Amino acid sequence: MIRDNQEKIQELKDSNSRIYYRLFSEIESKRSPIHLTDKGKNISEQLDAVAWVERVASMVHDQVKGKDAYQIQSFSFDYMSDKNQYTDEEHRLIRHVAFENGLYEDEVHRVLALELRDKLISTMSESES
Image 1: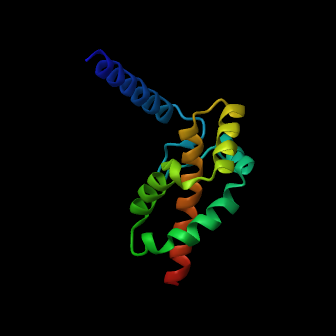
Image 2: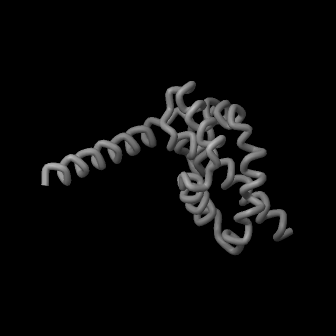
């Protein structure tokens, strides 16, 4: 029972941390649509995120076909927050960039997700033309 309570308390702490950094994020603007701030763009460059999401976008293109921009954004956040999507080398890079910039790994994942969203929306727009 004590262990269950400790786990629940830890879950609440983790949840509160995620809420806090999303409200006061240095990497993304809350204006619609969500976009990267200068710090977020810097993180993206450190990750070479454009090349990274270029590869991912080609793999997931069919999964977002026919979806609207909000659905693509939601998909991108879900996909890039799934730690199983990353190689060991990619995990190391994400942790390194997070550490060097005083961020949580989840924030670095959000940078990748926003870059993926933009790439997928751009690709969808091109294919519709």
